[in-house]
Amino acid sequence: MPKDERALTRAVRERMEHTGETYAAARDAILAERGSGTRRYVLAPDVEAYMRGETWRGISRGDMEDPYAWLARIKPTYECRTCYEHGDARSEDTSLQLVVAAYDPDLSPATMMIASQRHHARCAPSKVSWARNVDVPRGPYGVSLPAEAKPEVEGEYAVTVRPHLIVFDPSEPPEPALLIHVEVTEDHGVGAGPWLSQLELSVLRPAGFADISAVEGIEGWSVRAVDGHSSMSPQWIAVRVEEVTEERLPDHLYLGALELPQPWLEASAGRGELLILVGPCTINGEVPAIPDRIAPYEIDELLESGALLSGYVPFVLDQQGGVTS
Image (cartoon, rainbow, N blue to C red):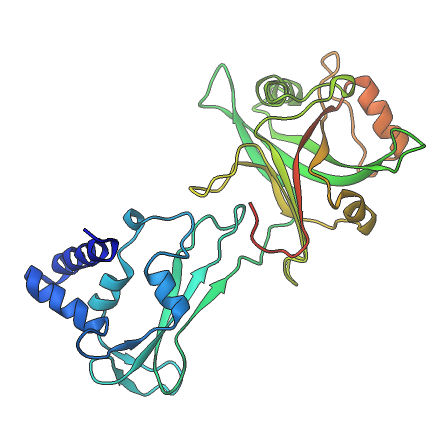
């Protein structure tokens, strides 16, 4: 059976479920509404492409009602959203406008339809408007971790990220890095040390994070830095702790808006990987302090003491604020 015929069959069966019509009646109605009989909807090419599923990401036919079946099912009369007068898609050319969530691997994992409007075709054209999530949260990012001995008990952490330029060799340009600071905000009365130790032993070291002398690549993790996203959130960073897929939002150790200094952006442009420093790690049972403002020599001291773990992760700098994976 041709692909278009299979799609038509699905749409017919979905209409039958909603209307109780016979197969033949439902099929004739859908063909008429698509323009085979009477001209009902005037659909622009981008609307047709979305209706056929050609511009979908992160969703499949099984996730939502067939758009053509939906269009056949909804009430044909409407109020034109341009002139606000009565309209009837059975007797006059009608345009369809769709508002669709634009795909973004960190902010919006599926191109779901958010809203629709109908107009007299003489009043407004048919089109798809892609809606982007522009309000990225700012401030500490909250994560949780179940206790190994009691999975029903979860420790809670506040994660912040600070971009730094680090000089490892005075003869070489500074290297961009992210300092990830983890603070335990809910320790269930046992103190921060045990929860930081569990984070280190069950999450960080198994992923490949190590002391700076043994720094290596981290499997599954990645960082995306966005510059020029929107006026509300011009710059933001996502630190992902698993591979990115189109099926769901990735797990983030951090996702938030923050200021990325221009020298850091320039140093990180074109790099395929980025150095991450994360801590504090407990030292002899004690939790070392990491200052809010940290000088280069202080980073060196923290690295030498073992208070920070390090690793290189795949990195992308998205300077257009557009869709990337």
